[in-house]
Length: 155
Image (cartoon, rainbow, N blue to C red; front, top):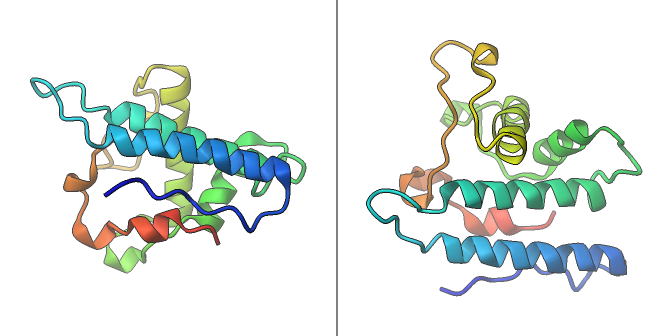
């Protein structure tokens, strides 16, 4: 199945249209990387995929919601977008609290991947039995949490 672009034709602001055009280019690259098969158990693009997806979230948080004009603190913008716009399941179904997940996405994925080549720098901040975060492709994600249509929707 080919990549389906996130629709943005209904958006009238040319700057925001450009943001979504560029986001679609990055997301189509992610889609292509998802098909990469590891060689000898390595090189499956998992960290590259995570980094690109986090860049998309960063860009959307700066230019679309909540925007840099509304919130100058980068981490607060990133976490706000996650908490208010990312589709999420209930904690009763095994999903992590959304606020905690937003914090961990920023502190344990975005920052180390962007600034420290994925170094595990926050062991002391984790609750007991919370191990280093990992990045997997769909086949490792429980089926009940695989909803790409909901993930690609623009609320």
